[in-house]
Length: 448
Ligand SMILES: Cc1ncc(COP(=O)(O)O)c(C=O)c1O
Ligand SMILES: [Zn+2]
Image (cartoon, rainbow, N blue to C red; front, side, top):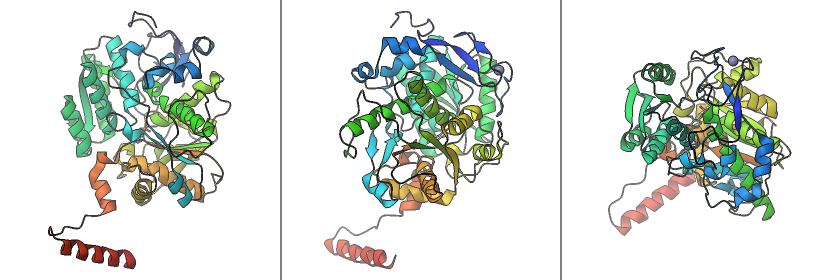
């Protein structure tokens, strides 16, 4: 590791535009290619390139597994930032749970849940925001800003607080209270935009240009994919451990140098950045020769926010905007900002986009928690609803090993959880009241 933390990271060779193919030197460009720099779905999205032979020569899965740093930092050879600049709020190393009872309930014995709600700010977005703050620090930025449906912002606020980095956040004013509370408590300057997430996004880009802030926006900042991809590194490592310890270990060991890809991965999709990151992670490992095949990647969207699904179905490269209304606020997006990476993830891996109704998304929260012990916000539960739909459509064979990623904790949206779980029984502080409550709840269970 070089001691000059402001120099380009050792293994990044450049950035390539996925729209026109232009290659840029590291640090010659920060956000999007000049072929399409304006906001909207049709951006000149950049993909970060690495020197894989040099990485393979310098490290190995065994060396990475033995790293005392349990966080995403131990994958720093595959990251676009210096390890020393990652904020001191460790991200990643979330559990991969063997979901035996949940799997049995849908006839899928090899089902695993990657619970990314257990990141420091309780969503997968911590993986990207750690990279954003590290880059902002490397650029000596006074302020880092983002637009977000809520989770990316909460993650940025937490990582920024850890690093002592000032931040400005643009969220739609309808974002759930828990997410807004996180921003305020961590000390970000919060601008609640009276408009949609898409309005907040465009405003944030304009403000960053005007005031010279470092912009973390999803799909616009190419480095966010590089943080999100670490979820795939952990999945193959943890699945390798599960297989080594004879599959179906109740709780797979966290670290292992044997990497085992699943057959299929399910993840919910809004802008398309997470799914692009999932794909990039597996692509990195394939390029290194550390895994031998690409898992099929399934993107799950709400029928009330289906822009990327529709583009995939219609064979389009750029999605047509929709008027998104889904209750799963984190995946409510009119004009997805990372469409090229998202569509490549599904098309190149042989997966599919799956649409689910909002009612199925909310309903999925209960089996996930009651049989899988994972408390997910609606956008996280959508991935499991997508698996159910894919099974029904015959897209998944019952002997396949499947990973469902929960992208956000259920504590992010308590009203949605209460809507599904119901209210507790209020009683007087007496045993008689306990007895009568038990009788009435038994009766109601019997009549259900
Ligand atoms: C919990 C959760 N799930 C899924 C997503 C969708 O990610 P993307 O917008 O990158 O597709 C988000 C994004 O905000 C999220 O917060
Ligand atoms: Zn370009």
